Length: 431
Image (cartoon, rainbow, N blue to C red; front, side, top):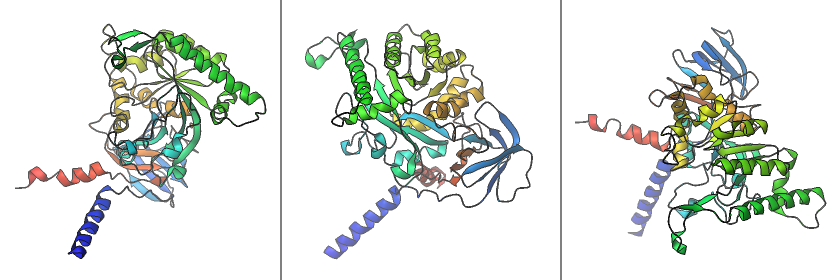
């Protein structure tokens, strides 16, 4: 009887592993690959009709129009479209698997000022959520810690790897700061009235941040007698090797945050959110501040805001000359990251040219994250990180990815979702 129980248990485990196993990461590119006949969207606003793209050893070697005499593996893509791999900024992909299971939640650490917390070493490259990004063309992401005042340090990864070491594209690229709000909700559990009210601690909270930054800068200017890991992690902000990602929504909060950073000697500042950033575009341009706009599929924050404000914010900023990118923060953030191309499509609906909207999730994001030397556009010498779609990648009706490559490696497009689709697609056709 015990033997039968063991066999049954082994069978169940085996089935479970087959059902939930992550797709095996692709091997390094071993042959020349030529994708021809497609409409190529370079990612910088340029389109090549009836074009071809050639890549070898993970790098793009030729992009052109018409035919080529180059020999190699030929992928016929007539009538299809080629795009640069989509990049997801300020994402917690791979840091949380199941929201309701605390053991799988690793995006927030205890403490208010913890810049030394590195999201990269907590990144789960085998996450089932991560692999579901690739069928929509999302191939890279900035893995970002959340919570507290200074949440920690992010890194940029590619989304087809065995572990975080293999996934890393840019290690410790920036420090993330959540600026205090001038208003906050009443804490009913402490006897306060519900609803929004002025934050009496705003000045104290902002002064605490300024003091921490000043101490970190002083720490780096002398030989310290003891090591402070938090201050050590801040040093890249002062020499320009790291960027500061400032999370702020209101006009006052944005102004206060940007000026506090600039006055502290931090020149590389990126605004995240920026709900009212359109009101202070000259200030942003003067201080060379880019904006990573929150999910456009959102409702307005205030009753008197335009109903379509979240939809049109990226265009307002872009028209003003600000470099803009899109993120997917909000409810079910990690799962919704796969919808990034459709967020860009929403901005097209607000009047932005389609190739300009594509920049919001490719070249602009690469520039903001500091990886534009290798990613973001389909140009000779850059990484062959791209995908082939049956139709318009910004339209959820036609974005059907047939091939995807990361650094020239053809990655699997199979996920738990595609397995379920195959299983049930013919269910109602059976008698």
